[in-house]
Image (cartoon, rainbow, N blue to C red; front, side, top):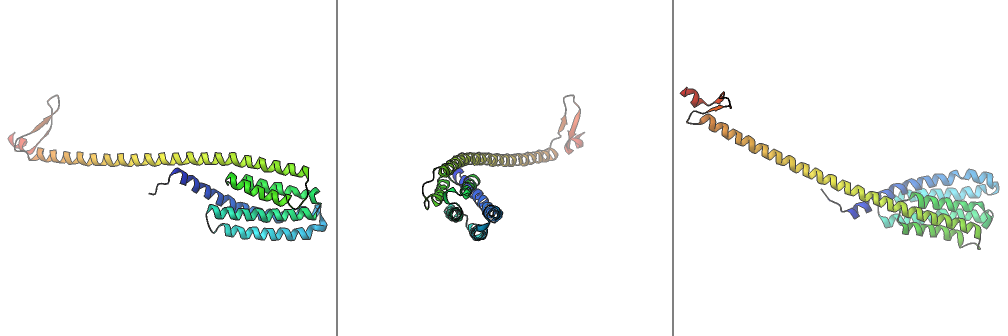
Length: 245
């Protein structure tokens, strides 16, 4: 049996969790991208067709990233896919913002939703979470002039999400550490149980062997042997004793 140390165990479990959560989020994001086109129809009918094209392209790319993401279970590979996905989605939202109201557009809320999905649902490191948050924010900020209100809300969402991600990540790692310790204790108990069982079997074999030898000596002794209890009642006699008496 291969014994994995705690650090490797935690990293492996984190990798598995990121793989599972990332795969689910890609599919959910693609469906959500297209589903929100209903909102476009009521909010800005003039831009409905254009926004639908944006959404379909983004959803298609997200599905493609989903299949690429599942090809390899590696933290650097996963991080690269997440960065690309965040960039694609944030660019789509930014194009909608620029097409409908600019810095006053209600579509900036899409950036906040994206931050919540990234920082809240992906069990990624705080460093990667901060990088993804910066990518989303930079995509929103750089092409446009300074706009205080929306910036405050977006930054508050980003920092709140980072804090949430940090504490969740620490709790997740702590739980994995405890799970590893319990697993090691269980393996140790199983090992002791197996050793004890083997020891009992060996002692039983030795006892049976001794009993067989004593029985053989008792039956084949040249002298008569009688076994009695404390009251003088005969419990057993060998063949020689029978011949004598």
